[in-house]
Length: 319
Image (cartoon, rainbow, N blue to C red):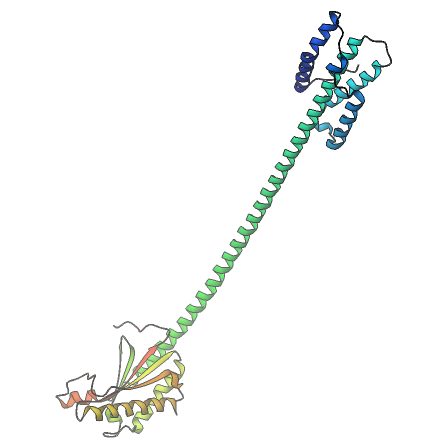
């Protein structure tokens, strides 16, 4: 019989088979008869081989699987086949049958182990593939996040730069406007700044006495103001009419409203400003800036103020 290298599992199976068949072999040595049906299954070598062939076809072991027990089982089956053609003792046949059946069972067990290991390997492969796919997805997400972050930073920088450019231009327009407003300073027109913005105060001398009609001198000044505000597009204007305390409060309220309204209307037409930028308020005698008990004080209180504020820029800090 051909010799096969024996693995650890093979040696274990051989030990088991010897343990099972030793009593039967001892009986034959003592002259007792051995019932071959009680030692080996009644199915016989043909059935064992058919069963082994079926499982071999199902599992299809390869050289990598090292199915040494399968080779040993087939060798035992082949040896069993030759016993029928040679005169051998009955106890020898019984011993070979038991041993052969054990080799077949050991080979079937080995095929089962191979099948289980393949299943584990397949699950491990699936798990590895799933982990690799997850890692790839994470990499793609990181790339997208980095790309989005970079794009966002670029866009944010563009927006910030654009805002800064707009603010710079607005500041330049404001500075130019304030420079030109300051050129209006005279005995009848005072330009100053406060928390509300640039204040242009026009004396009531620029109006007809006790009337709201504009003098030609005032129209000339308002035309200059309208020209500046045409360029200084971000500025909003509040026109406030004020009076002294001479006369009734009702009279002064109406006079202040008419003067403020007429100034606003002139800035719109023919001044050319959008009416939505201008608001006219009559405040009468409620907000004096000087003492109404003196002639000089009352003259200062009779005025129309233009409060010019920038919708985009905060009012300039006071010196």
